[in-house]
Length: 427
Image (cartoon, rainbow, N blue to C red; front, top):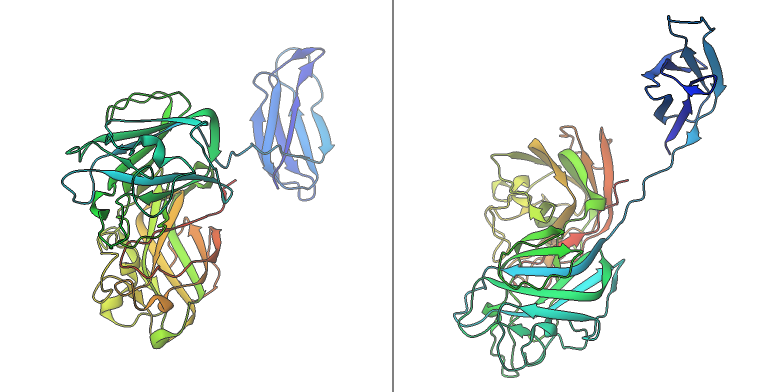
């Protein structure tokens, strides 16, 4: 808890400028000094102990004794941190798809607040798109809570017009502003009962904006008034199985921004099983304002309590150039020596970065194997210092605990399975 002392210096009824000093009453040490420029002064970030405030008379005019006051600080009023985004409009600019030559499709965009989905019906919003397929593939399908996550795409997804496979804009304008803190996407491409899949129609390189204005211009990449970019990256292709396929989007989280981070320390208590008697993680990505930091061995160094051999180095867990699908063998995953508890994994960056979101892809071998090696109960710390001590649970200087919880196993499909970690509010 932070404490402060403030006041006003006056001569008779007139506010005046004087030197004001603050002393620790117990030790006599000078804590701070300021000028009451407009008559007012303030000392912040104080301890809850007794202080002495000394106001010095100036050398001009009538001479007065210096004034001394004994006081306790007051509890500082903390600024309100809004732990959500507020939007009248959500704008999705879609650059391309995953390879289809005819259409772009998107099944569902869901908005969540504090873990609860915001159920929207067509009476609560209006949707727009650059183009649309003329047969019941309207833009409103992508936001309507009454549509289905699986089955046929008719009346259940938005689809572009034929041969429009780049540069599409999809917009949702809410009747009333909504507040949300996360977005989950079910990507497009219907899968019929015979198993035929059009998942390559899924949206790929995407930007998501929010605005407090009513936005209706469906021109791709057109200017957006009163807007913020909250995501700029790839949305993975839908899995080729006819099931609901939630994809967490690592949107910006201004309320959870940690600045000037030099080291990220991950303390791993255990994993999901004992396959090969080892712990492993495929990739840990760091985001700021919806954009992923690009990390390689040329701008970061990684350390770990252990690793199996040179094929499974600690840096592989942070290197954004490695692949997240297929086999993890050879430079695609960090893998420990035989142990299933109490490991520390560290990423030390050459230059400090800001972080407001973290996404983890847990261990897997082409989706169907080795998911039991995945990390489970973990703590993540952010530090402004260079941390290299790989002893599990050892002290970390200048650090903040930003996550203490569980990471789920990788799903049993060979896809990118970003799990967006709900890091602590900073404030």
